[in-house]
Amino acid sequence: MTLRVHTALYDGVEEQDFIGPLAALGVMDDVEYTFVSVDGPGTVTASSGMEIVVRAPWAPGAADLILVPGGGYGAGSAVDVQIRGGVLPKALADVQRPGPVLAAVCTGTLLLSAAGLTTGRPCTTHHIAKDDLRAQGGAVLDARVVDDGDLVTSGGVTSGIDLGLWLVERLYGTEAALLAEEVLEHQRRGTVWRRSPAAHEI
Image (tube, rainbow, N blue to C red; front, side):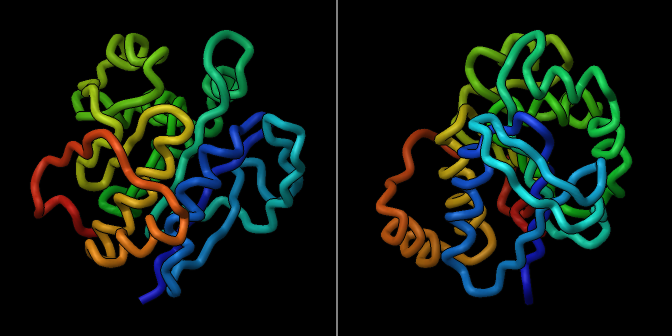
């Protein structure tokens, strides 16, 4: 069965936050990638100036996994602009539950928090944003990847690679994850916190 991965993009998004997880998942043969934006098809300018063409509309019902990358931190950051605008958080809040797994990297977790999706739930983000996430009601853990079933979050930037490798292990098994590590020449580090084996199914 094909795994349908939608990546939520917006101006100022951090490229490494989504490139890492997608590279890990991309080692598998049956993964379908789609870039989406709540603004609809168009061009998104990422943090380094890279222009990314978004051809698909926002359609969470067509996804098995929605990846939410970060985009800086603090007043005026890309994430702050999205939170203040409210459109992306509302779109995330409106994703049908149960439904696709929501996975966030770095300050992408703050977008899930703004959507009310991390309240009372185990989660993590970049270390500089943990106090904010905690103040907003998240049960913040000091783990590199936190898997709470349909909500999977990770720490800053390069931890997105580890999130991708964990999702490979969760969905395809340990041997597949070891293969992905070999292909990427990246060895995972830190801890994956997970509630229970039963929560590891899409």
